Image (tube, rainbow, N blue to C red; front, side):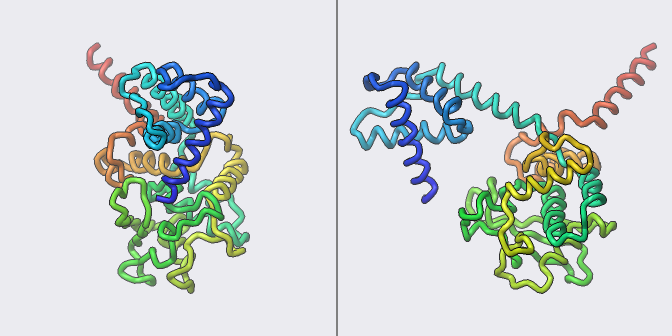
Length: 310
């Protein structure tokens, strides 16, 4: 509720700014061209994401109701819908350019990082768990240190090992918040142990939580400060730079995409990947379209087919 109110107030401020700068002489009700100009203002001038633009347009209904004015009839504005779809399409296309952090790349990072540093283990724990569990980075980490939502914060007590810590064959990680958890009940993720302890998410998490109180935040730097998404991405890009990889082509979402690709390369079915990644739609298929291994396999099948036909 707090975020909704904040979003509404921010949307009202943006709308007032738009009227003051670009449309001081507009008369109400606004026409479709006026609303298209507003969307362009939010995208180009304010650099807002498509989802935020959509929220601000929805807030206009409440704003106009407070002003005792008829609500905008966005459903009767086809060109506006086309414009919003174009904006969203451009943003998605940009996002697709980000490369995946697949498990082979994770192994390379583990092999080259400085394990003598105190913060390395924290970074690798997030990296390996994020890829193996197909996590969104926002499910594991905060966006900002000063924007802590207590009920969403991962804690040490959210991790459990089975059958025991000493003989752990798998672990569970309870996510108090997830994008697909519409009822807010939380989601339990299950991660099996890797035979190679060097890359095992269970081994890393055992060491991370050892001797700590269940109520402590799970991912904190040795200094005691909470790990944020920005700090993790900087550490990730630093490791990629050491490998001579163009680190600018990677983001926080690279972990989730890399997890899906790694599962596919390991032989997991599309249905299983959908379950593992907690997708409600077929959006996960976007991540699996350009796997070099699959393209090579397809080319070999086509070549074999051509020989048979000859």
